[in-house]
Image 1 (cartoon, helix red, strand yellow):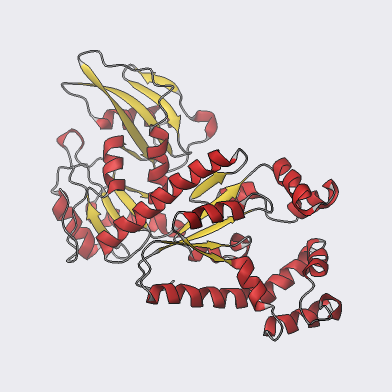
Image 2 (image 1 turned 30 degrees about the horizontal axis):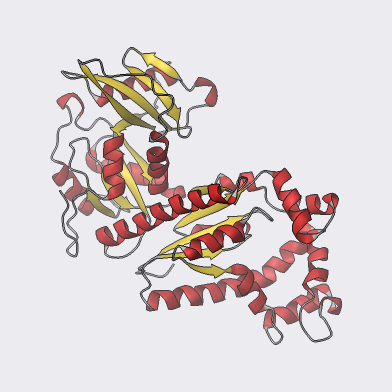
Length: 417
């Protein structure tokens, strides 16, 4: 939004009564600066503000109280009962709110705030403003919990509460767009633990991007398929990095991991441009490429710590590795492999429809991560002629990338071994 910045800009949203304000307060206590859209919304309809006059003209003088202030309860009853009128209200207030938000963001940029800035907004996705965030955090609960909490909070009946909940975009739909989801359906302690974990990775991405790029940008990673496998496609990763820096149109490549398999960090191109970024890498490297955003790698790393269903064990002639296989396309749930799929390969968990964690009982002599990738592909894409592609990395490599154990040639950055 404003460049360069020294902070990560994170959108925070959810549904009515999901506990978004609770999560917002927790993030503030962890040192985040929170910009509250509700407060901005109150500010733009203060007496004398242009938006208030427009609301009165649109919805009638009855929504203005005797002292000249907005009757929020009366206006709320109107817009919650009519989605068309709610959209009209949003068309009046959102531009004014956005202008005040931008002003505050610019102020923080001018002050060189170094941390995480959270924009707390209930209708961020509906307004489209989530696309302007570096990362999106959604607070979710099930609908029954939403309704019960709203009844208790506003002292209203079930039917009225249900109408308000169902008049909004479903939280489950919002969660599909999120980089991180906080499940606030449990107790406060469970929510706090999730918020702390998310805050840690947000802060880590901010610090890593500032080190690599000299300012804060969202990060993604590019993984070539088959680079360095079985001593084939063996190229100097530093040379590939330099070619990517100078030849890949649209790619802002920031650093690389030392392994010959090729792991390159870049500025996150955004969800709509992921395939274009992969193709740009392919044109330079001459290998298929797969791109993953920083939060997707975080979820892989988080899933790797859940060890209760691991069954492969070291047998003296092998060592067990945790391997993430990343596929170019989603695999339908009906054909996702589970459990032991080869003698030495076990599927532990599907992190998403295109990311799967496996255990590999790798022989101490011979074997490669490429064997795991080929096995997963053979199991999930059995038909010949399929164009599906995948690449595997040990969880140790994923952790290196997330931790910034990388090389870079940025003049302001010290190279890491």
